Image: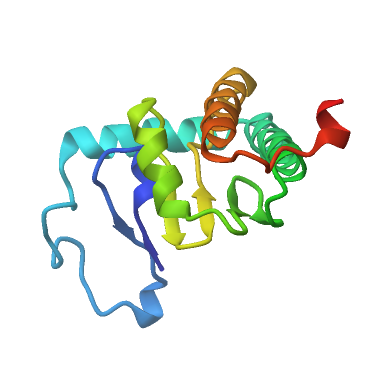
Length: 159
């Protein structure tokens, strides 16, 4: 099994896990840019320490539920599509709105979004994201959607 990205908490590091019976490498055989750097290994160790804390996964799950709820509110408010995904890896279908245009508008407001397709925004924040950061993103995205749509606001929700 190979590990990367999340293992380093944002710094470049990777790992290869294998049982001895099927391993084709001896210790030290495989090297590369992301392998064996002492600083990166220290970072990976610190990340694993945090991830293995008993309350960590509970906080991640809570943040995922909260993000999904907030995206569902936005979807209803602006007549967008469904919210898909699990945990903190979510997508918001943008309906008639062109997702790459929303990404461009978001960047002007200092918000980094990703549009893997023309009609979806992808959300995959850091596992340690807090509710205040989610709220800030939702407020920015709400403002962007308000200026992008002229008649998309659901009157029933906004009164």
